[in-house]
Length: 219
Ligand SMILES: Cc1cc2nc3c(=O)[nH]c(=O)nc-3n(C[C@H](O)[C@H](O)[C@H](O)COP(=O)(O)O)c2cc1C
Image 1: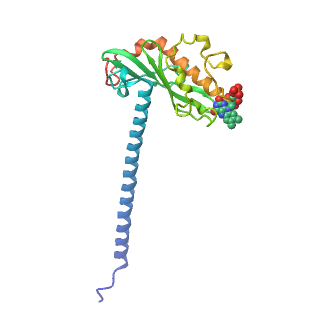
Image 2: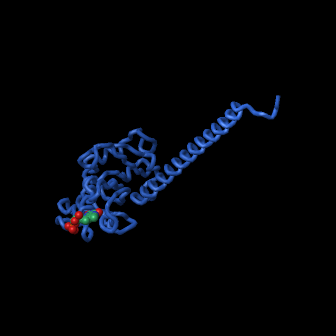
Image 3: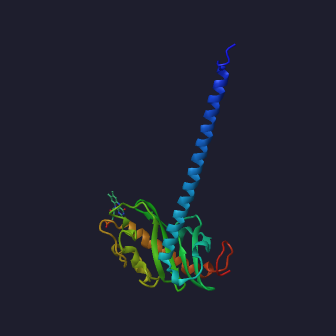
């Protein structure tokens, strides 16, 4: 008898055990990384949206948490999608101050363009921002506030300023500039903003109705 001779079955069991331990540790590490990455992405998205919301309706115009005071509405014709879109609501005390609609311009050059459209209770635009698009860099991307001041041209405008018939780009007889060599993108955005104003004209008051869909003021 030789005590130092190991049985082949024993060595295999040890190897299998080590392998299993590494597999479990690997899966755990991947799951942990995935979870913390997802949380970081969600936190970044929330911070980005909050910043954009505050650009569209300034903080001094309301005292509620717009981010968590939302309702959802659908109107394919005026909001550009059959899906429900989020409406953020701004209140000053119990008084309605503004809403931010999140319509889609379906007819950009390279597909859909997502917008935040801030509208004060008197029907004037408080601000507009593009939150996502796939327009061509150097041609259509002038709709981004980071690239040009074009989007700021909506500030303070309403359905009567300019008159409704001039709510399009200059090329089509309207009041809004197109870009050099790129008319399709700004035309799509002007139309979506105009439609958002029409939606507000039709449904604005109801948007401020207390609806306990989320927390927030006005309930
Ligand atoms: C590769 C390529 C990319 C383009 N990207 C855009 C775009 O992002 N937005 C846009 O409005 N027009 C874009 N255009 C131009 C449109 O095809 C179209 O000619 C233009 O919008 C019409 O504007 P105009 O009448 O001022 O020329 C692009 C054209 C090409 C060839």
